[in-house]
Length: 538
Ligand code: HEM
Image 1 (cartoon, rainbow, N blue to C red):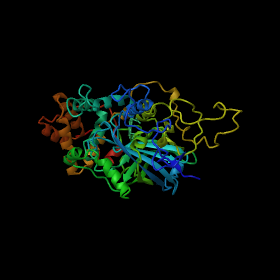
Image 2: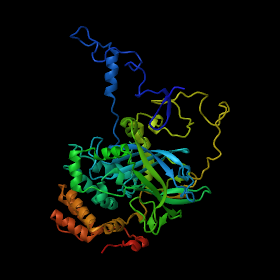
Image 3: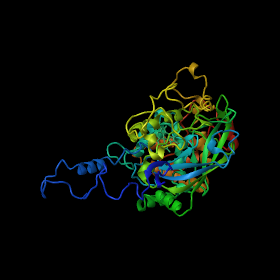
């Protein structure tokens, strides 16, 4: 049989293979009509006017006019690569997902990103990085949509539009670095002390990675794992780069932004092209699935908290190797659609309120970003497992569905029984007795400790890392116009650590305040004292 075109994700399109993505020897219109000239429009005489009947002109310009799709509302600037994930089989006791099986190879697509900048922004800015992985498993697609920082700014997804509005460029001038994106960002985080832990990481060297190859990744939320017997555990996902964790100096980052704004893209693509394939080991921290959903006093549903690795070591479960660059940035990196709800049997969500807002948000935004409900048919988004859904029609439908009307049970369609395996546990275990709970709009008191983990993070830094962090706070807060915001953020820092606060205050030429922000009565995690953290701060 003649060779056929296979998409970058390995999907056979059934079309004849050509050296380019299009077929045939001659240039044609979109209707396949051979062209003899695409350089001159049809005119009434050499000096015009141009004739409306020139369909080729209208088609060519119309298509060009619509080449751009909306950039992502966040994580707009990104870079992707293909690879393979190989399971170690070590997760079997806690997770029945097929792709984690020993030696099982699963194709993957990874997209790294910055959060705040637009599609054309520079790579080496101080920002959180996205680390989103699509596993095309035999059981369907699993997406691990994480970041390179293990905690998040907010505890409840309802505040996501607010933090993003505060961080994006100011509406009047669309200038990120001038009045008043710095003011709005620092205004938000100084009035929402739950952001303090994330801000500490963001002012540290972690927020200026040297390369995508030298970044950790985190699933952030706690997930629920289900094993073959239906037993459940809670878990956090970690990616650890084989090349180690390395950052840029702030001065380097600023210079590189000017000299080569595509620094991280180039670095990743060049490494893959040279055969120096980046590798990341996937690991899990595992906790008992108790009614309280805490571990050593740390609330596992609070996405502003980590569980220190000293208390729950990261156990390796597989290896990711990025070994192939994209063929077409738009088709792959731009059109890929990740979703935290893309789960496989053995992995389920917990009741983390940030995660629940995400479950709604990604599908919703992709509906407009990718032009309608059929974006799962775009080659990069197609599962590598057979698809036999009852979804029909809609904008940009590419499948030609045969058979009778899709509904179940259906005595006329001659088959497609449900799998006997449907009750795999992952989707039936969720239940807390929510139906009887009172409706409330507030967080549990266990979400109120906003300072002991930021303090723990500060104490974990080496002297040079501390110096970088102080300089980052001083630089970024120094860009604020509003004195009151700087003073409020200093009061937040005073609750984290007196030395940190004093050094930043000195850098800003302001007096260092005493701790002022007091949360509701909170019992700190007893376990934190084991790893050096204490509450309340001195
Ligand atoms: C995109 C991570 C919280 C809404 C992304 C991407 C990543 C990410 C990595 C880029 C995906 C890509 O490369 O295409 C995270 C993490 C979060 C978080 C780790 C917290 C732990 C949220 C929340 C919301 C949200 C709370 C909304 C309630 C979005 C949206 C996009 C996005 C709308 C754009 C998706 C698209 O257009 O395809 N996020 N995010 N994220 N995130 Fe989040």
